[in-house]
Length: 124
Image (cartoon, rainbow, N blue to C red):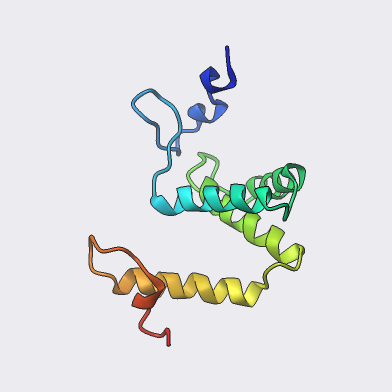
């Protein structure tokens, strides 16, 4: 059996959406983007897979995390943010400001239109 044919252990997490074949899938485009960003930053040599695994594991084992896996990508983003801050590649206030800007942009974007930072009414 090849790696691609191996069933993911995540398929047992009730909070994760599954494809018709029963494999975990991204519920929202931002989840795929967070995944892709993580892979890209790793490929650029900004952190090792060991560092990434430790950061994600730490987030997933926090006591306030959902036991059903429904906040898995929330933990993913928190792990990536923490790793970048710890390595001095980003600062917490900039990340927080961007998150707030994206939220305002999402609220200001008409349904069905792409969400862009330019849609944030407070962005200059």
